[in-house]
Length: 83
Length: 322
Image: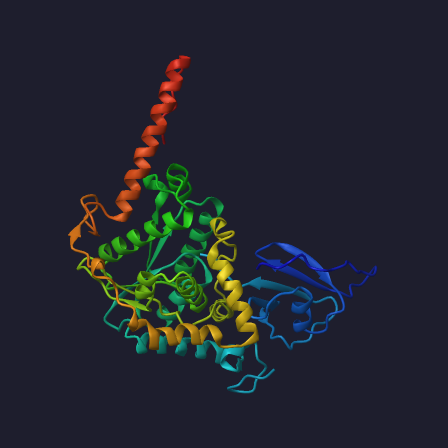
């Protein structure tokens, strides 16, 4: 994906999770990002160029304007292939 | 965001096409887009048996899925490259894909001939991608011949073609520009037509299609792709695309439509003889693949001779070569 290290901080409250859990594929990294309300905010926070990843929540794809809820689990799956 | 076509909630937004689609409309759009490319470039017809080169990645499996769904006669061909766990997973996903859909798949393992890509690289010190390309071209041609296929289809997508075109232009690779086409006609009776039905379809589009069709493809990158120049070119193009959607599509489509005919294939590209090693078409006595295989054999024999001398000096018996 070619992303720089993301600026993130773990921010959890006992008994609840206010941040969005993000899994980066194929890197295999997992992050928790707070303060993002839409997919486009998440991509901007992680400095990911739109169109270079699928944004997956459950069994659905999300467009950039889709809202993200606290405690959402999303996968950012790179679409870029090298060979 | 609503689907451009039916106004249901959209799952795929395509800036380059100023459109968004819900799942069923997207799958319809994608299939039609591929069909249009096939028809416009006269890639193949209903009477053709198509060898689909399948790696286990999103592009080749999406291509095979589309062609099979459209009712074309296809044979999948998977070349197991022998690159450790990556190749094992690629092969498994390809086999599972074919089994679930009842599609015919032929698999050839390079390791069975002592030509696993890591072994070839280790013996010859050639760049992995260069060796891999030579090997793939040979086996795709040979498989098409053996399986009675009239065309080989690969999953090269718009991003691949744009990156390749950018590299060819940056370095003014005139011969390569002459050969960068979505359809390459055979230059020998043992060659078949080679086509790229996804050449105007972006990686985002094929990945979206594969996901929405429930295709379990290999997401991880080939370990040899790390630092590849193609990836750098793709990064540049993604940046341009982000600022000006449709840039990649215009770059490739208009090159094919307006500029490619200005680059003529050199006369020396006419293939006239058969390789003394494998019988496939060749420029010289041995084809590129047989030259590579001969080099691998020669270097392995030389290495074994050195080991044998060393062990003889130490009073040991050398281990047999695999």
